[in-house]
Image (cartoon, rainbow, N blue to C red):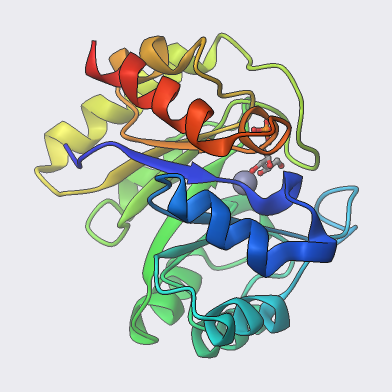
Length: 221
Ligand code: DX5
Ligand code: ZN
């Protein structure tokens, strides 16, 4: 199991002051920057692309950037994110015609790769690529927006994914995304997650460190 990591989703940050927001959340103790890419096609919302990732790197962000692609098609944007300094690139298996090829493109470019599963999407396609993925991301809301409620059935799915990871013997991160807060993070960790995306729970509070400390305190119990 990977050490616990807190990954604030900058979707809920103030985009008018993004560099400062990222600096502040990292100074508050975040481990990974979660970067949501939406295309108004695969999901009904439109956010940020590779240029913003490049800008964060130029701004001086050295922490891992975890690019969550909610776009279709997938392959033609991968190269730009590799160049932009993405550390992880994950995509939804149904958003690409060739899952193995898309994973390999990411790996060949030197980033870590992973698959993302919507709340009602089966983990079936993992079976054939467990030797390749560095991360499994389970959505605990339907993708497209921050601030939605955690779907409780995701806890069982986390247990299922954790069992697959243990059986593989590989060091694969198990990330959860959607509706995560200090209130439910402990139950989510107990179900097997090691990496916790949180957008509104962190950025909607005035003091990011208080929230991140509260999350870590729950994880240490
Ligand atoms: C939703 C995004 C999430 C989102 C989570 O499609 O993938 O990363 O920002 O936001 P919260 O934590 O507010 O549910
Ligand atoms: Zn996300």
